[in-house]
Length: 613
Ligand code: AGP
Image (cartoon, rainbow, N blue to C red; front, side, top):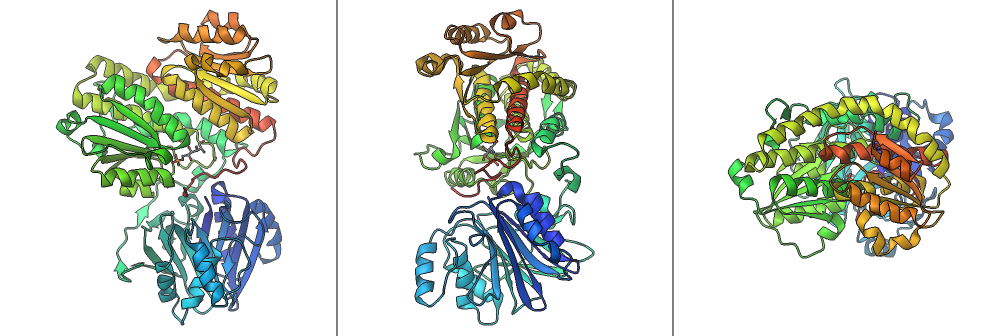
């Protein structure tokens, strides 16, 4: 959604905030702004467009000898991207400013009420209401005014506030929108929407929970309950990531770097969780005994976007290897349909960010209905992890590119481990098969490391030929059908080419009408149990002059007889094909988008984490 950074300390504030916003720009980037305190006055700079526009306008003040400020990079929800809608927003006096991530659902009524009291508004945003509401209650005590104001607010917020009347503090508040605080041993305190913004300065972090407020001073952070006003003890967590992990390390884009990091991300995710000799899986975070796992009647997977595709793959694995019925829901549908959940159902929210509003809402519903909630997540301390009964962390490291890649294959790794763990408890998979799969999992990172550069080369001519396409159809069967969906999502979200993923067997029920000489069709054709069926579907495309791209196994001569555009992959245990086959599709999307001059890491209209409905 949006990115917030705040700092108070002894160092120069402008470079810290600009640098922090740069590391958060993937969260939203249609406008940006910074405010800092200089000689008792607030200096505010705001720009439409990318952060570098703001950077340029702040040339003269970059080294200002100032030490407290706030910054914001925006993904517009209310009011178009523009300078006047960019944060920070001020009250009538100009002495109080706020930056905000979230949605104030009752902002219309609050704005009417404030205007009737004489407040004048300069923007179309919901956020500006917060500045005037705090001003309305401000009688010399900023914290008291914020607490009173937020009691009237409905909706989500991560909020940073600075007031010239109490220049020795920043105030942060959180409700249903992520906010992390950082503290440096050598002095200085920070607030940010996400961990990467703070990594160059500190790895000591405090995660605010909903309805909590924090007062940041140069060397101290105090956290209190928004409603109670009572001070709260919060753990300081040490983040294992380092700043370098959030940088590009010589790659042109974060997305390309993260595609090439997948062998390591997969390895880091399964390390310590399996024994390839015995096939044993260790997932104590599931927190259920074998008896309880045997008593499960159903598993419900809930997620959005790419994470939903991971859930779709997991359904094939779980039902095949654990003999438990599995439901998969898009979270925004899950939260509004009539759910039949109870303690006999394990609900698994899957989320890279751990902050996706729809997935979080689904989690809360599941808990209310008595289900055990075990999440799969990539971000330590994120909201979904803190509200789950247990979390199986993926260890992909920070994923900065808006298009998810290494998080996806890490999610698949975690879901396969969960499958094997439950199968082990329910004794529904032979030790031989489990050991064989564990061997294949362990061998995967090295195989990927070896083949990624070749994939990149093999894909280049195909990307070159198809970069001008207007449409694309991706076909897959079985556990590769979700990979067709994922490949299409990757292409559309970064190249803006309309692409659809379809079950190969379903194409003749409608989409085949799309096939002509201009329609590229990519089919996933590993030599698995449905290979012949996929080939019949591919022949149907060929008979209508569709432009075919086939992705299959090295040495499979059938493929070249059908089309010249073949991407050859190594043959591996077919259960792992979803992990392997998604990678060339990531590279294809990346190369086409790059050739089309698209902004690969920050595609238009998107944001890395959708923390609103
Ligand atoms: C993935 O390429 C997309 N950017 C998007 O669909 C993403 O997967 C979705 O928003 C879910 O995010 P989450 O995994 O952080 O919950």
